[in-house]
Amino acid sequence: MSVQARRAAQVRAGVRIEIFTIIWMVVEAAVLFTSIYGLVTRSRSEGSAIGIAISASAILVMPWLAFTKRRIAARIDSGALRGDAASSLTCGYMAGAVLVGVLLNTLFHWWWAEDVAALVFLIFLFQETREALEEARGDEDDE
Image 1 (cartoon, rainbow, N blue to C red):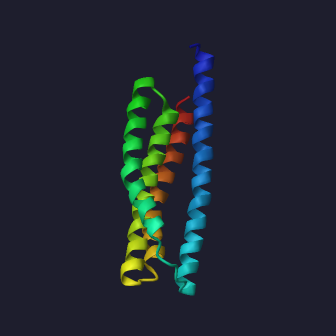
Image 2: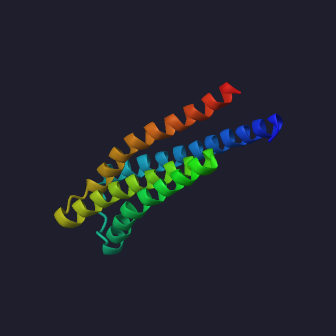
């Protein structure tokens, strides 16, 4: 691979990471807004056996998928696949937060549990998004 082609690939990877980061920021804003709205209005959602099953499945599948993607990314030296592996792991954490909130709401009728679980998850997600953005900008500075 020529130096120009390698540089172009690095630039494209940095752009993809920045786009990914912007998308996550929009998701974070939506979760923050809906969680705060739910707490302020004391909204009560209904428990869902299907939601519990899907969340429990995601807790099992997503970390396995992340590990598999990470292993393949290392083999083929793909930063994009490493980033996708991180997204899969984040999805697993998100499923855990959802499951905790839905179970607490369903079992104990704690109407606020899902919103609080989402806000706690946002702390993790904010940090991950900030690190991804710093990494993308750091890679650009290295060029």
